[in-house]
Amino acid sequence: MTITESGAADAAPPINPARNSESPPTKESTTKRNAANAFQALLLRLHFYAGVFVAPFILIAAVTGALYAVAPTLESFTDSHLLHTDSTGPAKPLSQQIAAGTAALGQDLPLIAVAPAQGTGETTRIIFSDPTLGDSQRRAVFIDPVTAQPLGDSVVYGSSGALPTRTWIDELHRDLHLGDFGRYYSEIAASWLWLIALAGLVLWFRRVRARRERRSAGWLVRPDRSRPRARTLNWHAVVGMWILPVLLLLSVTGMTWSKYAGDHVDKLRSEMSWTTPAVSATLPGSTGPAMPMGGEHADHMGGGMPAAAPTENKAALVDTVFAVARANGLEGPLEISVPAADGTAFVAKELRRPGVLTTDSIAVNGSTGVVTDTLRYSDWPLMAKLTNWGIQFHMGLMFGLLNQLLLLAIMVGLLTVVVRGYLMWWRRRPTKEAGKVTLGRAPRRGALRQTPLIVLVPFAVAAATVGWFAPMIGIPLLGFLFVDVLAGLAARRRATA
Image (cartoon, rainbow, N blue to C red; front, side, top):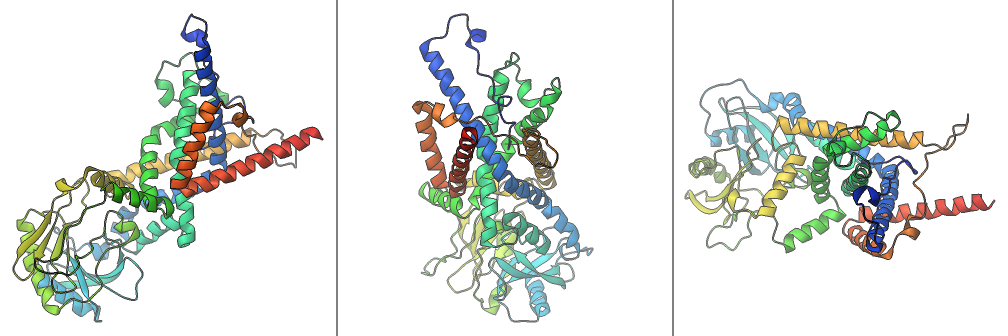
């Protein structure tokens, strides 16, 4: 919910205590009612300004997010020649497929991982580190597992191995292909989305509660068609109500990818021991560092794979590691990380599958086939699980096509909410003189002056705290206040003149 109609028609009428009780209102009830009305006025003004100035960022995020939601499915069509094969029969040993991939590459690049084909018609990925590529980018050769023939190579991105089509859409949604500067747009959208949505929820709830039919919960989720003049507002609010839970989830998970708020989230998770655990790849008796395996953000922010070249005989041990992983219950699609140095184990990790919430991983001594460390998904901290599920849902990978279609529907709904918000603002123009462009009115002024300290102080403290934690909320909020002060001074000058 981004913008409400301005002026007296928008604010929910103050609740009439006479309708709720036959006894006269007490001083305490009057104070509470005035505080509630003042808080509503503040929310209305915040909702309006945020809707006018932040909604363009949310609109862009909704359009690019709709594309991002269906990107995995688009990838399966645009890169079908690399992802699928018609061959049937038993698969060749992984060592033979690795040899074919290395020969097809035509250059001496270090092997860092192998993702064996999971089922009939799928291909094996032989993944190499390429110093000419950017961060989180790797080069993969796609092998027909039945014939061990290379089908082609491509740059892949992140731990999920997104191909160029999905990567391009991913970067469009994240930063509009403008680099770090473009990330400000997505951080503003993600940071303000939950705040605007919750403010709209409170305003709509109070509006419904103030009506005679306030006891009917249906008013919150069903548009009122009996009042044509308010039809746009009703649809604006009700569609926002329907998509609100998913919007909150998308906003929270989107903030974890952001530059400033994301850093604070990472620090908070670290202090609370909510970080994603990783299997140890250090072999017993070795003092070398464990191989980094990335985290739930690897698809969006980094791959977490080694870059150094392993010795050639390690490629021949991948078959042993693959067999050990299957024997230890890793039944889903795997990615086997090849160690870059002695004293480091192979790591086999289950990749995300639609509808499957668990991803186990083990570390294996490739020379002996002994499992040196095991990390079951059931042993993850609860908050790490919830974060991982939220990230996967945001990316459209948690439930496959159903997840993607749901996100697409939510993004379309958000588009209608934003457009209706601007439409209401446009219709509230004070004049419609020919040749003169005017803008819609803002809500009535004086909300801060009329707000009791019991409401204003906690509101200011909360705003300062949120603004510090998420600077892309705090900085625009100061900008709204500056614009509001200028608008007030201009209005006072016109009135004096």
